[in-house]
Figure (cartoon, rainbow, N blue to C red):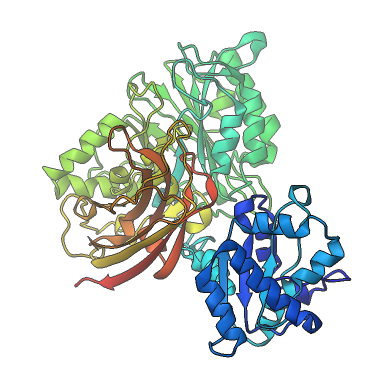
Length: 630
């Protein structure tokens, strides 16, 4: 739609500014568009004959007989006017030919046509050819006043947040944030300082910034004696590089609350001498200031504080006797209210004496070596926190299948009162990750992953924490917080968790799927895989057929169905790959979403790269339907 203004557009004319800006981002010839608009009253009626001739001439030039016939029929009054929006690469050559000897004013005259004619706009930069960029405002202003949705307006709606598969009401904090800290899943990072592997990879403050901006609420610092009495951070007894402890604390202070206002846990694995422990305590107090709470909140030491604790600061500290080396952990937690001033650090020291200056910030919990679940007659204090390697946690989880009543519910009940922290096994020197779902299903709160390593595990992790406003805290379902709960993920029986649903979906099409592997000469052959991750009986995977040689607008039109019995624990992952019959398929993009965040109806899925960043235009178009499955 071409309209030319001799004055700047007023406020009303900016009604579709967002759409116009999106169009003007492009600089590719393929983005030239042709719009046939037979309903819009023309602004240049004196050029009606010229406009008709121009429309027909262009359609003849590109050889579009179908559109040409429709235009001619409308002009003769033999067809109903409509609106067509198409992409035509040939428009470039046509306008180059037409504009070769024309002034800008003459081109405006050619483009501004009458009712029943072809209207042309483009998004090419002026140096590419002598075509100008024009506005779209007037057309949409008229449609808005007439309460009419045009076809391109409908397309804009489908591509907007309203047309997204993610329920926008979950993009803000909507859950109860006044529960004890142990009632939440907490987005947590392992060896946060590392950018790559655990043996030779670089350490950097940038790694903390990246994790925090991705919603992480628990970061880890491995602290060792450094030169000049300054503690350093690195993966001990390896070739990983070192950074100053003070620099890491500064980075955490500056970025802790850019994404979320809720507590950040700083896990300090302490290998330092007494003197450098004192320096660590001094840096934390000096740099963090009143962001670090050194007294119990409201004098309460009978239960964990909530993420939304009243007051300016919160400090949660623990003594952790680690699994392999009987480490001592100190965890300090700070929470933001009206300003960024809440953090949670955690200290681990391997068989070293703990400096009083560091132990003085220990407030809320003592983390101990796991020795079994609570005895109902003499329960352990709430502040005793358990820490597991992934291997031990998985062994404990697998044993639930054998002793599913006594042990299964005991693990869940344990995680109602106590914090459980799980971290990757020592053999994962490549910084690979484990699947967090099984451990979430029994209520473990602090599941630490290597944020620097992309992959399915990290996709699922980030998908879970999309919920609740990307705050890094997700309230566990009620049946994982109820002391009377008999829920066991290994043996699903009827109960509060039993809400069987039928997830029906249709994978309709894809748009602008990129070719990630540039070394291959072939065109993208996309295939979509849909996965469900939750309790064992809900897990499933289904795939579409492969569409050959079409990454621009592949069409599948395939329907799938999944039975989901515990929807509050389920996540749905959409994966798009470039299929290759002879080699491994190339990953194109993915999107993971909690089942409870799904929106029904026709929806777009905006795909993410392997690093979790959004593609500018790659997406899937689907239809979602959720039914009770009683």
